[in-house]
Length: 405
Image (cartoon, rainbow, N blue to C red; front, side, top):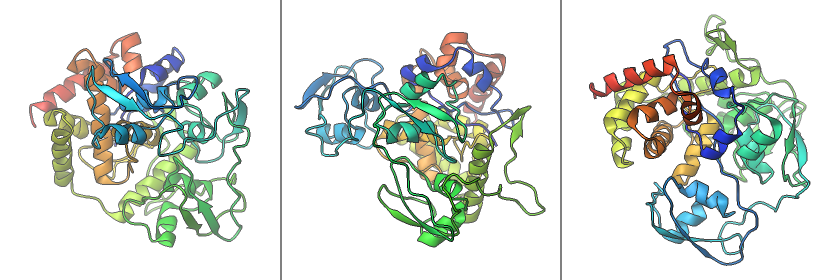
């Protein structure tokens, strides 16, 4: 098992606490490999929404997700307006049509109030989901609450929400003996199951979901045996045969939050229950996906091998999932990069997420070793601190492995 893949946006890097990346270094698994992951899914949006389509010339380092955020629109709207494919590939100097909130086909969330607000963290919530719910950005929430590079939050914590919409209502409490839940933007089956004190497998079974556990916004899910309140303690950590947790809660002296470990165990149980491709099949997926997305196939395979050994059932205590070891918040950012929702439990989507992050790092880094280091240590930390000693070993391992593929 290994740690999650990470690529920091410039905005998120600026929002980090100075010592955050150093604290995040301990988030490696027993193999001694892994990459950091952080909620870096949105840039700070520009002030006012325009009322007619605008033209924008792509600058070096731009991505569709950052451009969409700056102009108060969505990735899918920009892709549609410009006929971009699923990779959402753009080039420096390209002229893009930017559909505004008035002209975009997908209406944005209600305009947030300038006065801001607060939110009490419930079990299973992430900074990215909270930011999306209140119509703000991850970087803004991180900055307003002095969060570190992990964007770590705990159940019961009260967050200041800059520019939060005051009318954003919490989800309805579940019924005591089972109930229903309407899927909100950014939610996953694992987070919903944890919130209601049930399991991923139970939700999947009750709703006839496929092996990807795919859900859509607005879908009503049956929640089997839901707890009395949405803020009730999460279900006990799934146990393997013999009473041992599938995923532990510590690594190299670091203990992870119970909610994070519970999600990791739920995801591990789900992967084991649904069955995954073999290691050889996953290696083939990594190679073919990298070639399709314009990334060096040898590099992508070396990263995947270093992260998980091509074992898609790998889940770390930090809830880094699958072959590419991506945590949900990094999966959100990868979804923005490719312009569609990615399910990290799905083998194909997991590989797309990791390769998309890697592609962005290669594009924005001065050289290949820096890109590899950023996948492990985080781009912002590498820029500020240089490569730590364990990062240099990681880079050397990956570059050596590239010769094998």
